[in-house]
Length: 224
Image (tube, rainbow, N blue to C red; front, top):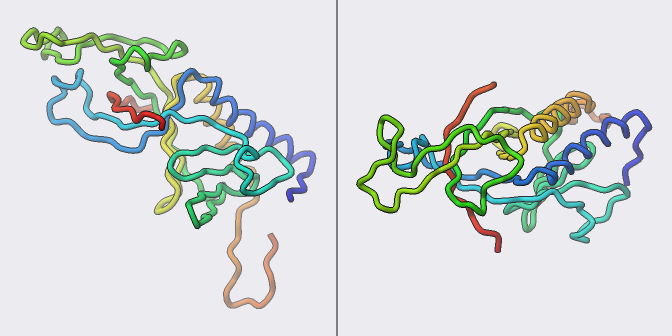
């Protein structure tokens, strides 16, 4: 049961609204594997291929495993990531691991992403260029390949949320403005949460409580 003050609730609502608004982006993915390339000419000029899974932000009550008196945002991506007011829970089959907001670190970047599958082309991101699957040094198509297809380059927002040696989420958001606004809100909320203090083991008293551009191509995982 959460008892939240009016002022705290205002900050929490802004954070939760921004988190749920990620669903308004045409595409939201979780990146989970990267393969570096030595020969970008065979990968539309990309320096790496990315494995990603399309995800959504749900309300936790659909799972019925635990009950809360407020709507809790959750992302399901292998493990369940629960965004509670005071901590993020990483829930496995038989484990729950908490990570506190004031321990979070963030990395934001612009990702120039290559899309070749028409089904994956979002309608809410900026098209910044075109290339070919097999490309010559001058940017033209390598005509040795008969199946050489056109590849579109889009600008996505990427946000990495992590705790060293613990939690790691790498979000790729097709709507740049939505991604940027969410990054601002989660960073602001993390700074506003009262820092977690571990109990002093020697005390018997109880303690209260970039902007860098990346060049990637996709290797999507289908939802089962």
